[in-house]
Image (cartoon, rainbow, N blue to C red; front, side, top):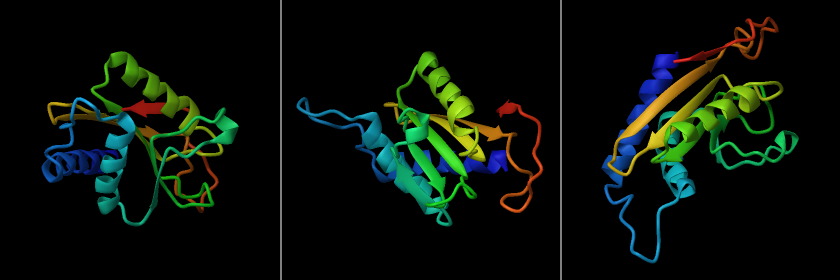
Length: 156
């Protein structure tokens, strides 16, 4: 499933750059932001993940008001928290590592327990880097099973 998520997220990035080839073209009075890119990228991903609700920048009060960039879930419940995406615009290694830590220590822990986390770096040269993490802290089959895997995180 991890590979399927990675393929889907790569396809969404390719679609973003194909459907909006001018996504990085702004005047000197305006500039593209990470939030703007995340919005457009979320729309492309949502076309491929129609079975989930898609939200951006949702405040998590129990997490010191931290906000994941994009989430795919079922609103009103933690039972179908499928995917959390942290987006970077031309992010460097420190930016990516910071988002990796957020996914691992915030979005993968209870009660949220997203099944997958993704680090997506959208670059101004219209390429992308996608890294998908699987939460091995998840129930084996959601939402029915209460059994848990070991508390480790797979970075792929």
